Image (cartoon, rainbow, N blue to C red; front, side, top):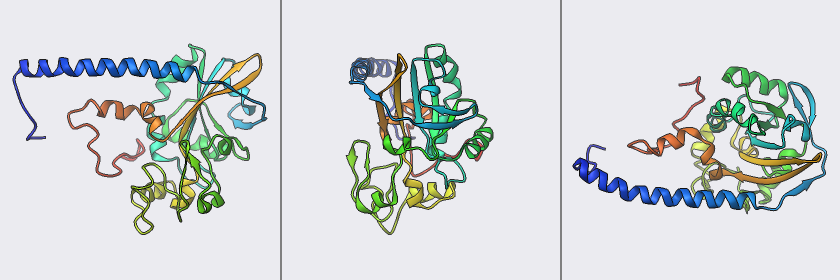
Length: 262
């Protein structure tokens, strides 16, 4: 950073105004893209999913908590995990400040994971979170929304994640592109992350991150949108700040931790 270009305030202001035009164009494109999200056809959900919550057994409609819109973060926390995924945890750290605002705008924000509820609640207390978190343990919910896969899918190349099919590999890798982490002998950062959840790479990566949106109309639930992988970047609050910092993301591997592990 010591070798970065320098200049006068006038030089900076001229360059900043040029950048501002590009930023404004990106904002306009983002607004247009948001409109296209809202125009997606809604898919009626007739399957009866069951969840366990702090209030007891719940249906998907119950997760709306009396509102007409539901945003679900598919949090990577499988039944065999001893702790939640640190990346999902970093994203979830930003939920508490948004939940109340969204709730007063007819939107419920909740997390859903496959781990049993007692395990989720213990981790929730550890992290100091207050947002709703439901367990889908024993349900097809995560499988149907492409955030959980079987061992057979891993070995046979049957995983379709982020709207593309992954090739069969010994241990399915998640988080970066398959090309970056495809080496059979050097699993890279994913092995480090898996270890922090008390699992191996194969077990860890059968769970995947994502978010899904739902609407409730006259008692009927509709699926309206889902995104995965880098589509979650906008929800990862710390990266929005880093993208505006002098050094940017400046990453050389896995640098983040759960907030109580720094």
